[in-house]
Amino acid sequence: MINPHVAKSGDAYPGDLVLLKRIYDQVCQERHIAEGTPEASELTIEAMKLFAAGIFDEETICQRLRSRFSSRRRSG
Image (cartoon, rainbow, N blue to C red):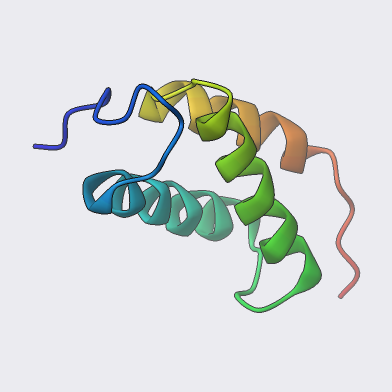
């Protein structure tokens, strides 16, 4: 199991990157965001910003990203 406070400085270590990738995959799947799209890139940037700001808890990051990406309309 990954320790949610691996990096207190906001630097991402290998275990942190696994956590962030899992969050990215989960939110992309839930919000139907395709990899490689501008929206997916924005999601990655936002996740890293939260982490760099000292938010290391997986559920907290997920909730904030879900909230940010939930109200967007997708063309299709």
